Length: 91
Image (cartoon, rainbow, N blue to C red; front, side, top):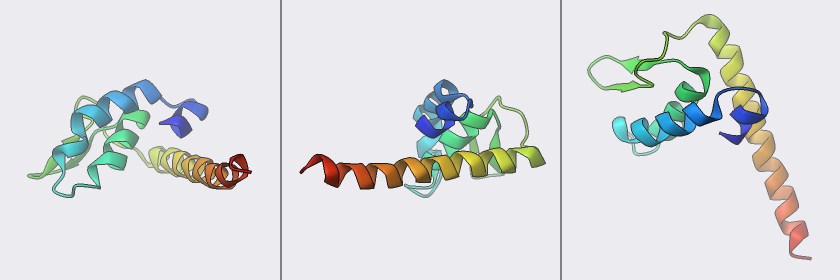
């Protein structure tokens, strides 16, 4: 969500959709990033007969792949920065 906010995506909607939809997938882990990303991008992700994440959002478009990859890269960069900075804070 922080990565989404830094890139100008909708972090507030990501938070809301994550809180509402994270537990709707069969996997206890998959729903968390999927629902947050659906909210950040404003899309609805559906696996017919299984889950609907981000209900009310628009259908995903090809451009959303690029946006999702940018958010993911920013999230990884933030995690790496934390891993580098946290050990330094203990010194």
